Amino acid sequence: MRRITTIADCHNVNDFRSLAKKRLPFPIFDYIDGAADDEVTRHRNTAAYEDCDLIPNVLAGVENIDMTTTAMGQKLAMPLFLSPTALQRLFHWQGERGVARAAEKFGTFFGISSLATVSIEEIGERISTPKMFQLYVHKDKGLNRSMVERCKAAKFDAITLTVDTIVGGNRERCLRSGFTSPPKITPASFLSYATKPAWALNYMFRENFELSNLKDHVAEGTNVALSVAEYFSTMLDQSLDWSMAEDIRKDWGGEFCLKGIMSVEDAKRAVDIGATAIMVSNHGGRQLDGSRAPFDQLAEICDAVGDKIDVICDGGITRGSHVLKALSVGAKACSGGRLYLYALAAAGQAGVERSLGLLQAEIERDMKLMGVTSLDQLNRDNLRYRA
Image: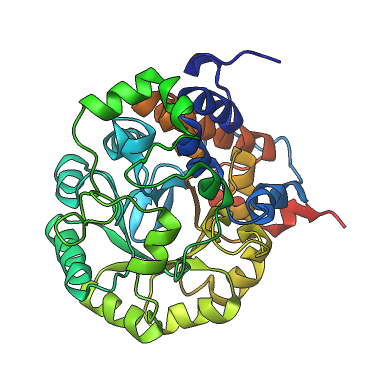
């Protein structure tokens, strides 16, 4: 087996996964890598792309390639962006700061979570490229209003309301490791932390870990250790419904995306409440195991609402060809979390930049091999599905 010891050895997402596994204590790695129950959906998210083949054309004159797209009112230099994810300073001390700077370099969307470890204000002040905020609706209505108002003041470009976390998924790897935010070292995990001194020293001696957008309202996750599943199940508002989502959209007043849409019925309702985008997503397989992969659902959702709302295919993407397949079906853009979290854990901002650079190069090369010079030339005629 080829040894992967530096980011120069990493040539794809799975290489970064291998390096991240070497550099993180296993409870932290398993939080990124793991999913719900038997993790069937988590693996199906990527496998779904392998059931669809690309049909290339040749002699098309592909010297100049345009891979720009527009999503949520923003022109992106590439049709792939970085989904908002929680707890990033646990994976590498640079956390959201490093990821944001990498996204800025590549001219694409970047999102921070309600459970981010860097504040809305800092990201708004420092990052010039498109920014989204992932809103988790808490029981504390004052907290919800505060986060929306802070995003307005910081001039974020979009709010993405996550709608598939009414309760936490059954993430058994986290149950076995005892993973919490902030980390709580257990007898079972002690050796893993002790044998990763670089991670441990960064965690202990750099700035204190915190959930920057929540800490002034709730202690959980910053000073009180909870698992993410427990946080979702106890802190989030389980009465969240379409009426509440529409009220948030009206209060925000800008580009508004629903993340976690998987059915045609829900996609249509998203249009009805005035959402401007949806992310077809199953939360990386971390919530309902046994649910369909986003790519499997993409065609029927694009057919139903693709002319009325921006449809984003989120999850399972490890290759540039996956992006082209989703865009051929009808998505405006694609997004993912693990595709950059492994790279962040492996080498911080430099890792994320290398991962994005590799994926960007794959998209450009594959467009040339497909015989297309712009994304609008992709369509279902260049796809075939296996029986």
